[in-house]
Image (cartoon, rainbow, N blue to C red; front, top):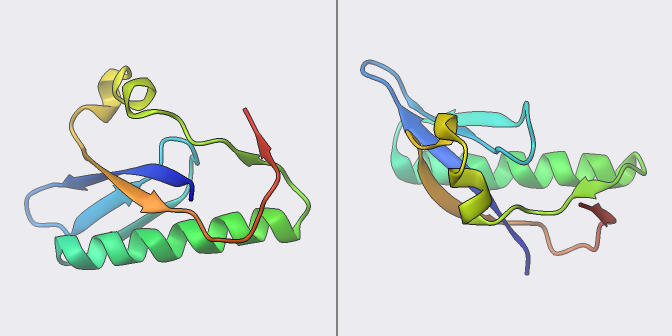
Length: 92
């Protein structure tokens, strides 16, 4: 099973925000860490299934080392989110 790295961010007075460095524009949020992680799974599944339905290639997941090499990613907590089980065409 493939996993994508999601970054969870928290600013004072806000929910926990989640973003996917490999998938710009795929973002979600939750009021708790558990909810944020669940929403991240849902957002990733929805996005990847949409790409597959549209016949678009899905980017291969980056390694944690590749993600954390970018300074803008270091203020988030990295979590692994499983990709949906259906086979999708990947590109690197």
